[in-house]
Length: 394
Image (cartoon, rainbow, N blue to C red; front, side, top):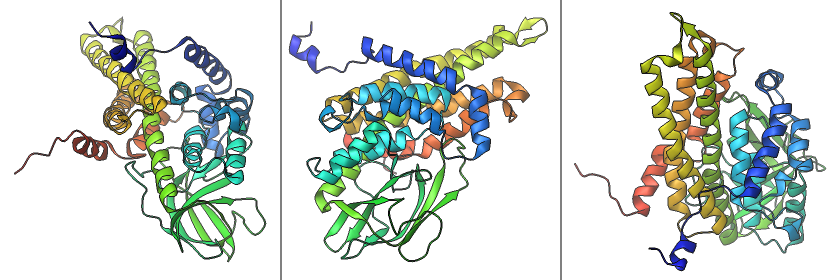
């Protein structure tokens, strides 16, 4: 029998009453404001995100500040609550910058000196939802340290260089830019609407936010071009590297919850469709082969939930096992999300391949998430090193 100390150190994978209440509120909002038809319409609009939905979710419900301490204007919650929000956003492939602003940008700032006025002010704006931020790194960047900066900072703090594949940059108010400066690696803030900074041209003293053609229509990507852009340094070499690494680790760990929610919707929608679609006078869901496919997927979802919840719980507790739990979650949940989306498309037959049905949006989000913040292979490689499991020789 476990001792009380042993029990207190174990991961809690169950949802608390507060988390269930949060889920119900977010799900109700998304059911009303973000049904599949609305997501399809928003994808056609080519807007970076739905500002009305973001205002309701981030500002009115306060979810943008879940990871921000209450003394800095946030909700003082943890990664567990943020994971619940991301599960629901994954279930609806909602076009909002929650992962990029409320998780990645906020986590990077929390790794800086929050007693500094400009850091605290930025965190307050992000927590309110009145400011949308983006971490200026390729979405494919994996945790395990700070990626090499492709932007340089001059002695006056002006930034020059290019970063490609940045998620959340289109429509952002502030960019958090890792750059190599005279004193080494640093994290800088660029206000898009500041004097001398525009998102339209690439002339000297301005930044270009160039939208890219992305597979996932609900999470736009952009290339950022900096040409002597005025910026404010938020953190120096050691702290900046740690802050960026912290953001990528938190983002990868919580992305697993989004992948879990996506896979859950795909299975639920597939079960519903196979109950209603008839062939040979019977629902196709009654055919044994399809039953087995959906049963296998359900078993995968059970394991994915355990992995995602473990990562969120470890992040919330700031556990020393965070790198392991995140690597496990991403290694597994990314594959499950893609499998669930593929099965959803295939078992819907021809309608699953049409623009009118939202299944293709889920498949595109799943495939995009599979390479976001590190591929499953990259995470398996990291996991092997973390648990001292060398690759086979020869």
